Length: 132
Image 1 (spheres, rainbow, N blue to C red):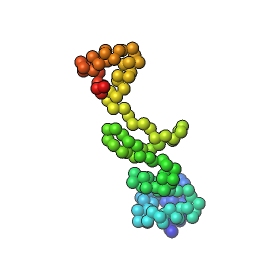
Image 2: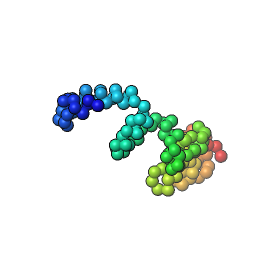
Image 3: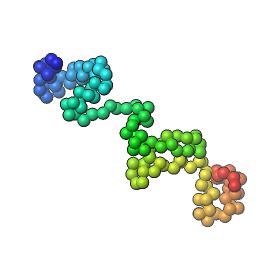
Image 4: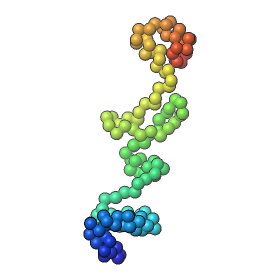
C-alpha cells in the first residue's frame, strides 16, 4: 500500500516517466495474486473487467454457451468441427468450403458447356471435378 505515496508514481507525469518500473511492479503483483482475487477487487472498485481467456476457456465459457456462439458443423473433408456462427445477419454457422472441383460441372454448364464437353475436359485433366 506504499505505491500511491511512492514519489515515482505520485502523479501522471511521474508515472509516465517511470512507466517501466510501474509496469514491472504491477505485473509482479498480478502474477502473485490469484485471478479471482484480482477480478473481485477490481469489480468491488466499480472497474469493469474480465479475464482474457485462452481457447479452451472461451469454449467452456457459460456466456458463450448461452449465446450459442459456437456450434458443431460437419465438414466433408475433416468431419465435425466447432465453428463460430456469423455475428451478423441471421447468425447462421457458415457453410463448409466446397471441395476442390465440387461445383465445376455445374459452373461450366452455366457458362454454356454441354455435359459432353465438360466430361471431355474432366477426362483430359483440364478440369478437376468429381465423376458423375
